[in-house]
Length: 224
Image 1 (tube, one colour):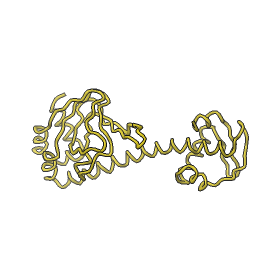
Image 2 (spheres, rainbow, N blue to C red; image 1 turned 180 degrees about the horizontal axis):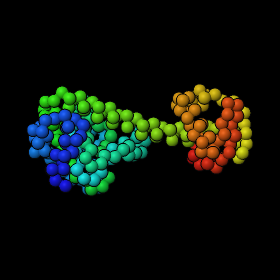
Image 3 (cartoon, rainbow, N blue to C red; image 1 turned 45 degrees about the horizontal axis):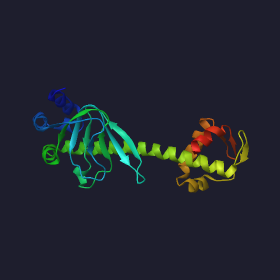
Image 4 (tube, rainbow, N blue to C red; image 1 turned 180 degrees about the vertical axis):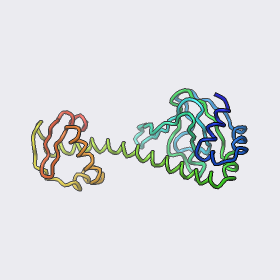
């Protein structure tokens, strides 16, 4: 792939499509080609990083490190995608790490190179906010998915510990959504969704008055 491909991606991508052809040509000229082998880090969580990247070939992944040291890939960046370093906007450390999932070639622009060019067009600046909001919504859905799975396990444990059921046993539902939410550290809305998920997947029949434990092994596996 060549810089001609970069020029095409700039023409069609958010933010850059709002620039003049001359501005895009200048960015192509100033782009710094970088290559990363699988597993190499582009930027580290909790460090300052204010570059903008275009993924030319390969894949990058945003990963987050939890306080207990667990690493989780949040989502991937694929060819013709652009990455805007968070530090570029607020001068604060990065909330996640960016690493190569496979051998990857990128074109990069440091803050001092790209900001003066993008700032020439108001619509391009406005487009940046759209890009960031879209990214924020994507991350929200991913994090919500993590929370959903974590709550599923905690709620399964709570129900098993409270009722100590036998397979196929039906018990009186003597705990409210609010009480379950307090017990697993989440909201009543998420508890309700998880209960319906248990029902849909055949682990637990849920009614207003009773719980019927229809697949105890699956529920126990989830609790572990």
